[in-house]
Image (cartoon, rainbow, N blue to C red):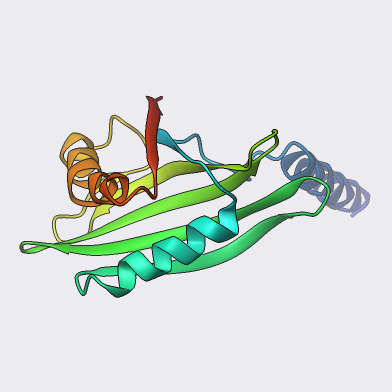
Length: 158
C-alpha cells in the first residue's frame, strides 16, 4: 500500500513537471514554416485586402482563426485559405505576424498545405504531394496577389 502511494505521488509529480516543461518551453506553440513571404504594411491592412480579394473569388474562402500574442510581444493571426482547384479541395494554413521596424511589415508564414480530396500534403516540405501544393499556392494564389500589389514575393523555403 505504501509503495502504491509513493508510486502515485511520483507519477503525479512527474506529470506536473512534464506539463510545465512542455508549456514553458513552448514546444507545441509553433510549427516551422514551409515558406515565408512578406507584405509591406501592417497585418490589419493585409487582412482587409485579403478579405476583399477573397470576396471577388467564389472558389476561395479566407478565414481568420485564433489571434495569438499580446501587445508587448506582438500579435499573430492564424489564417486558413480554402480553394477549389479543378476537382480538388485545397487547404492552406498560414500565420500572419507583424514585424518590428521603421516601416510596418507583415510576415506571411505558410505552415501547412493540404489536398483534402487526395489526403496529401501536411506540415513539411517532405510531405507527399507538397511540391504540387506549393506550386499551386504560388501560381493560383500568390501571383494573383502580387499582380494587384498585395504581397511582395520575398520567400524563403525551409
